[in-house]
Length: 85
Image (cartoon, rainbow, N blue to C red; front, side, top):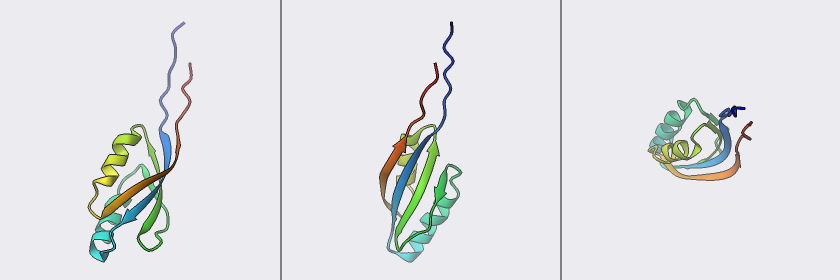
């Protein structure tokens, strides 16, 4: 019998710290809003809650860190899918 593995994206809850410089923060927020796997919450000062849905959470996390205007990305929660056999 052949195993049937499905890949489902994992979910990660993040707190993104944006630059305190208004222009850099706005540019970073705009770029983050264009990421289809990232659902952004309501920013509080320079902190931005977000939920990441990705097949490659590590790569997506690194891409978010590389956005100009992003100073820090903290992972609050990670849910990885169970694989079916």
